[in-house]
Length: 357
Image 1: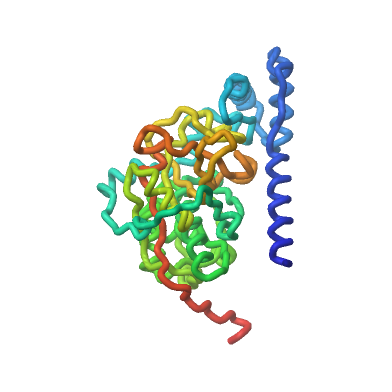
Image 2: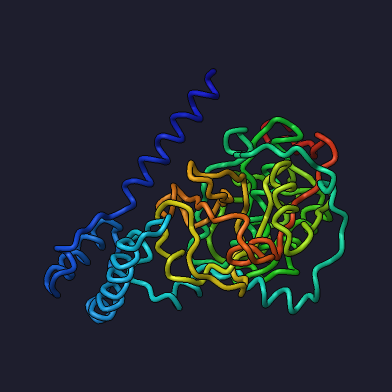
């Protein structure tokens, strides 16, 4: 009961924080240069963004273009809406550099996807909807900051999820350990989720967020913290590529890491609804699918956990249309899916604290 209360309070706080992060504006705010300038000042105050005088005019010009884009899209009859979030005075190019995990680049470097088993292949009679958040298998939304470490956040969602499923314990794990210590990837310069899974397996596990907290920058690997693993896995498997049905089988059983093309302006400013906007398959962002469902009108969607904080999207999540008529899925969501394998509830025993010695 107490845990339930704590979860409910945390959820309400997260929702309240998410609502605070959005800035409403009207047609009147877009009517003139002066009204747009006042809107920009309101936005800066709302998000506590400071800009020096030399940069303020340039940023205002970017902001104006983004305001008009958000306003134009929101007047269209689309199943999703946009908002002026914290990225509103960044160009799309700057935004892409801010978060990019360069998945496609690293795939080319490392060669074609490894061939693995697919333990969920025989899954059938799948439930019509799944939400691992309701099962307590998903930690709160995190924020990667100005670091292309989304690959680490994506992989950690997978490990946190399967650990909860196998042990009954939800433990927030360390992305920073992967950023600093996993050398097949390049920390804030991007990487692949499968490399993160292999590192966790070979290292005998991964430590907690509390022991090795996130810094949003590349640092030297702290071996003393790395050598305090609390959750281990037995490896990972790739979901058969370009197969949303296979992805659905996997997600019905556990949270799954996926890569998407998140380069479009609509995703930059996504606020709510089922996203079905324009995007390609130049995979550049690692996220995690934590469920699926359908709207009242029958539109199918994936529930995707992002790592841009709770002020973006639906308290840090987005819903992406599922079951479209291209095999790779919307934004390439079915192209690079993987998940960790954990065969038992066994985990490394934590080292005794100095107080116990």
